Amino acid sequence: MLAKKSGGQPITMLTCYDYPTAVIQDEAGIDVIFVGDSVGTNVLGYASPRDVTLEDMVHHVRAVRRGVVRAYLLADLPFGTYESPESAWDSAQRLRAAGADGVKLEGGAERSAVVSVLSERGVEVCGHIGFTPQTAGPRARVQGRTTESALELVRSARALQAAGAFMVVLELIPAEIARVITEDLQVPTIGIGAGPFCSGQVQIFHDMVGITPFSLRHAHRFAHLRPTMLEAVAAYRDAVTARAFPGAQHSAHTDSEELERLRTLLAAQDSQS
Ligand code: KIV
Image 1 (tube, helix red, strand yellow):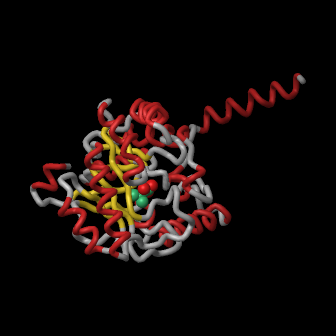
Image 2: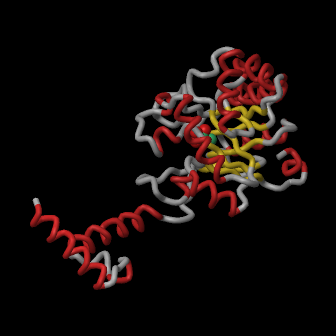
Image 3: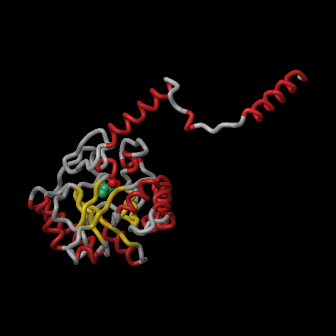
């Protein structure tokens, strides 16, 4: 990742929660396949990312690991699982045992102690500043619009890097501030709603392929799968209802002699009972 930043090559990162999507993303050459705690709202039907447990993350990291052979596999430490260096260590160990190459956590300078203990023990840690869904309210708001709050973001990014973070996600911050942070840090930044000047970009897979029913300013629909999926499901419903599916080509057949023998056997059994 550092080599990509130094070489001026953008890093590509996408969220991923399951095996078939992991296979596709890996085959497509995505650099970082990321099991985010957004699995809670995008896949598990939870109301908040705070509802995601470590067990949920372990389950999804395992599934994604089975599909990733080439990319870097990053996984979120869920809310409440990294309050102290020791709890963070235990949680990170669980995610690594499930197949994660590195872990991501939210927060700035206040997370320095956790990040340094994990890094010293050999865990690769990605920071996440700006809008931080685990601790922010439900409304996604751009952070760092004032000089003071932007300065706080720069300080946080520096503190995470000094503590050993190998990468920092910048979520919902003005493009100019993301540029200042990216130029200030040696380690790469990955933006989501943070403009084009970051070292790389991350998107939520479900937004990017248009499965999510709403559209967000910072997300671009590279495909619009929701209407296609809805159409396919409705066509299936109609075909089954009209007995048009399955057709002859979808069915296996037995020869008439075997069928006749079966009927004879059944009739003989029925007459004995
Ligand atoms: O969980 C997630 O999807 C994230 C991204 C917004 C970076 O943390």
